[in-house]
Image (cartoon, rainbow, N blue to C red):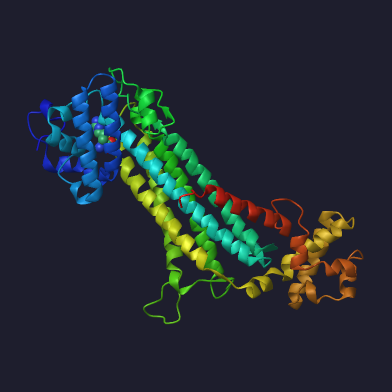
Amino acid sequence: MAHLWSGRFDSAPDEEVFEFQSSFAFDRRLFEDDVNGSLAWAEGLALAGVLSAEDATAVRAALEEIRQRGVTDPSFVDGDDEDVHAFVERQLIERVGDAGKRLHTGRSRNEQVSLDLRLYLRRRIGVIQRELVALVDSLAGQAASARSALMPSYTHLRRAQPILVSHFLLAHIAAVRRDHARFAAAFVEADALPLGSGAIAGASYPIDTAALARRLGFARVVCNSLDATADRDFVSTFLHASALTMVHLSRMAEDFIIFTTEEFAFFALSDAVTTGSSLMPQKKNPDPLELVRGKAGRVIGHHSGWLATMKGLPSGYNKDLQEDKEAVFDTDHTVARSLRVVTAVVRSLRLQDTRTEAAASGLALATDVADVLVARGVPFREAHEVVGRMVRDLLAANRDFSAMTHDEWQGYHPALDAEAASRITARGSVEARRTPQSTAPDAVAAALADARAWVEASTPATD
Ligand code: ARG
């Protein structure tokens, strides 16, 4: 077959080498975006007087027909073309001959591929953001039904201090909301029209790029053609937002894997989101969560791999940039699927609050005892020392604060009177918190209301 650039060459390309450098196998995913970009370019050329009115009409009708065919029958988008841009151009020329051959006037695939990927990412970011909102909604639902249930928090995976279960769930919500904002930033970065850049130096036709940007819904036009034809920062930002989202999903998965073990049993996983063992009849495994944790590595790999690809490139377009697409496609697919799976798991969780409450007390209240002493004028270092001694004795006797008599309290420090001792409970500990980001019940209720309002405000009316 003839290639887009056959004129300059004496011989046809080596088959395997051509295959190696062609991208149609994966960039066909940009088909619709490529046709939409071409429709806009045809209009730009017509407005600039480069394409006659009849040619523009013929090109528009043919492109619309091509788009229609490709959308209704994906197997149509096929052939031994080098890439999706070559495919669309071949289809166009087959339909309208010379008029089709005029479409590429003043345009390069270097800017075309940047345009297509920007259009693609703008669409996909919206999809991922909707999945992020659904995840927040599921976590908020669990937080609401946990009501005032208590659990221990952990540092170094050792019991630290009592918190509300909803505080734990809201911690994950906080991270997911940052992910949503990071994708919004990735959208802004992708939201610039590269057309008019040509192959590198800009177009020599009076194309109204601002009008083209408006038509394609872009907020702005790129500012430098040399930069624009080789800039994939918007890809890096998208991959970064994705990698960090996967890190958060992986940590959430890890929490739920641990908290649903027989040892913890803070939550139960429903059968629908677990798998059994072919050998051990008793097993109910959290495979989907483990896979999310595993896939985080792969998305992080796409991000770091992409930065490595970019770092040695001289100015201007280089074919290395073609590697962006497989990284993006696998990433956006993986992130969206992982989000749906984690949301399904979260929705199905059953809190076992007798377990969480039992684990929330005991020696996890040590800091609260120290706080009581501080409230009664004892310097914190001294209080820490006193409580440390108490903890040592209690551990040796296999007891905790709740079993201590009045005399025992007094024996450690005279300030530890009956009133003080009565405040040393997991509930009292949580209620003693005073800052807005704390696990104080009022603060948590406000945070939950805020999360729900955010879900409401972030959900498109059409959904
Ligand atoms: N398939 C190419 C890519 O993905 C399109 C741009 C090709 N440009 C070129 N000068 N070879 O980057």
